[in-house]
Image (cartoon, rainbow, N blue to C red; front, side, top):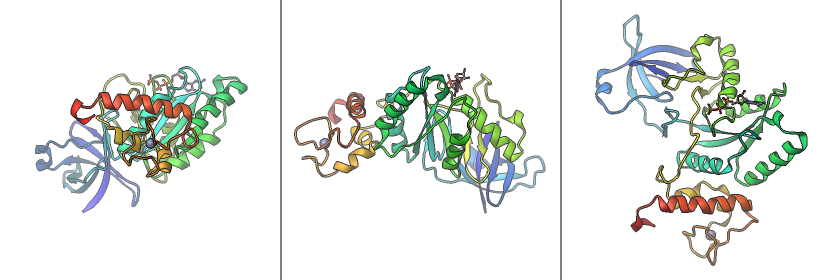
Length: 300
Ligand SMILES: Nc1nc2c(ncn2[C@@H]2O[C@H](COP(=O)(O)OP(=O)(O)OP(=O)(O)O)[C@@H](O)[C@H]2O)c(=O)[nH]1
Ligand SMILES: [Zn+2]
């Protein structure tokens, strides 16, 4: 049976897409699937067959197991989360970036940092802010891109190369330019793939399903950004989950006196400014409080 990815679901009809060999078609769900609790989402990988119905020529026979599922935007099997942060207006919320990195690590998603509005600061200011962000995440393994309204597309080209082949969504605080960037990138995607531009629907203020746009050469971009706020307690992230979100800590694994050390500055902890940026360590310790206070008393 053939496999494809759901790129859109509206009123029980699903658009299926596959890059290789190229395929796109409309499908409905086999009745037995509709009785399940599972609601297929954009990003779901499915098995399908011909339906012999000329209007809706395919039928989804099975939804394959998900590697993850996100709520806002509602999408399954995300590979990458683009943590969008503007250089000014609003100023970078590195707490949110840290939280999103933890969320990504917990869900087997690769985080990528995209700095926007580089045109809005003076050269000096831009250098200072970019250097600060870079220093904060230098040892985190985070890939970083910076772009603004300056007529130079080289950084966005580099970004597109980085995300090609992946299923990607944008995240970040309000006003950082997520929709602007999506419009820009999906505009290119739509031109490349020859899709109809009025399908895009960005800027509409109605609640609607997330749609994935195929990227030429492989991968998908979700048209709906999300994750503008995130509370680790609400997500039931444990102190252990939090720790896993910091690539920096791997360097001291087994070095702290206690194997399950929470790196909160107790005796025998090997974490220092030498392995993690001091401000990021400071924020980590505050987030640790957030995860601990989200736990039931017996688990703390
Ligand atoms: N100068 C400049 N302005 C930008 C840039 N990117 C976005 N903007 C502007 O910033 C404002 C906010 O951009 P949006 O794309 O709506 O931001 P958003 O992150 O989608 O915001 P929410 O929808 O509130 O989550 C708009 O007025 C954009 O024109 C940039 O690189 N440079
Ligand atoms: Zn430690």
